[in-house]
Image (cartoon, rainbow, N blue to C red):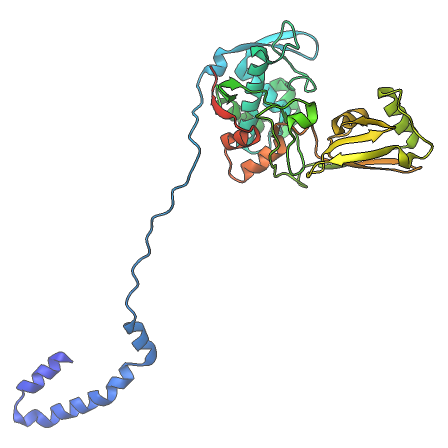
Amino acid sequence: MVKQERRAHTAGPGRAALVGALLLGLFFLLPLLLLPGEEREEAEPTPEPLPTATLPVLEPPAVEPNTGWDAAQTLRLLKTDGTVEELTMGEYLWGVVAAEMPASFQLEALKAQTVAGRTYCLYQRSGGGDKHPGADVCGDYTCCQAYLTREQAAAGWGDNAPLYADKVTQAVEGTDGLVCLYEGKPIDAVFFSSTAMSTNDAAAVWGTQVPYLTAVASPEGEEVPGWRTEVVFSPEEFFAKFRLSDPKAEFGTDPAGWIGDMVTDDTGMVESLTIGGRQLTGGQARSVFGLRSARFTVTATKEEVRFLVTGYGHGVGMSQYGANALAGEGKSFVDILEWYYTGAKVGRAA
């Protein structure tokens, strides 16, 4: 349009009518060219691009494996048949992880289990316990840590044996020489299967306060196999079981009065109760009646005594199913261990 305006000013008189007609046409067409939508589109300036920088992702400092440490360490394992076998730390830990945690779990959970197993072994060997003269640890899970040979593990894994064996190997090699330390020393890295809402203080279960074994939240729940269980006794069975542990207990004729004064914490763990007039802890009741944990409720009638139980294990230290849930949320084995063992740090073994 600017070029035509300039031409109109320089045109001869014979073209004045033509130029006037063109200007008149533009006068009527211009409003049509500036429709509201188009006017708005051209009127708005092109927005500047938003900044592309992102906030930094805060991650725990990397803890590199101490390659070759496990292979250089040997220990004596008291096997379930009574014999003692000497083997490397790496081979021992492979058998512990294969026995103690489902190999289908997340790799970071398996790594956490490996570090806990290594730490527990060093704690026992350094004088934290002296349960087995002539051996450092045993293969009995009720005493130390369970242990399977590669052949035993493969038999239990079936068709998944190659995959699972490789995962366990990755867990061991990926944490070579790493342990949980409190004030520079290996901790008593106890663990258990599952809990409800929270782990337990060592003091509440065993009567001894341990700074790194305090209650913390744990995320597992209904997805855990056998997370809720029931144990039912006849009144006669219940009476007989308890009298074996405490012959002086006194029971009336009505079972509804046999159990009382139950005290629980906020997560449902039984701190204390009375049975037959005798006071005991939830852990003691768990042992007497073969319950999976001390998180239970109990009702007694003339027909039955029924326990409703949640979780499995003593509840102190690292929850294995909780570790798997945290790994599923993207937590590393370092995150998991330093969460469950309060104040402990993952570092290299001496």
